[in-house]
Length: 209
Image (cartoon, rainbow, N blue to C red; front, top):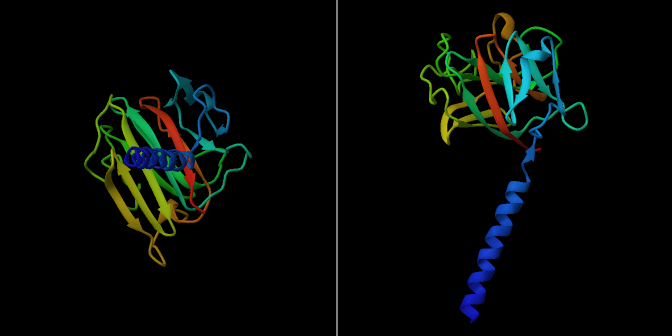
């Protein structure tokens, strides 16, 4: 009886720990509307379909604003599920800030692109540490994770590390990438062009600091 009770207690303790660990992640999307998000120049390019956020249309970016209307964080663990349609290009920005038009100038872009013509593929840090071989396929859901602690960035696709990057002391950034730096800010989902359709769901965020 003692052994049975001990085993049962251990199972319950493990389950409680697992629930507590999952509880640290907070949902960023309610599956119904874009509450907590602010879409810039082409709001019709980001919409809800079958409980997913879809990016499809003229250039636009959906910035996460959260419950406060002004989300800002530095160290974090983000995870979601992504599905790309053929020839689709998108991106997940982090440490960025709302801009009314154009491509976000601040923060990093984690690339989403499995078969579109741009050689920079899913899982790379766009223009900084690129991936040139797609780790996922179109029309199939895949897990996307971004982890940032200090100057260290890790991107995983389906649990496999695709990018492992530590920003140096004085990174060299040219042209329109001078603000592509670790700092703090929010996240944004990119609608790249009318020929690109990408689905996002189960968006979860754990702030580490």
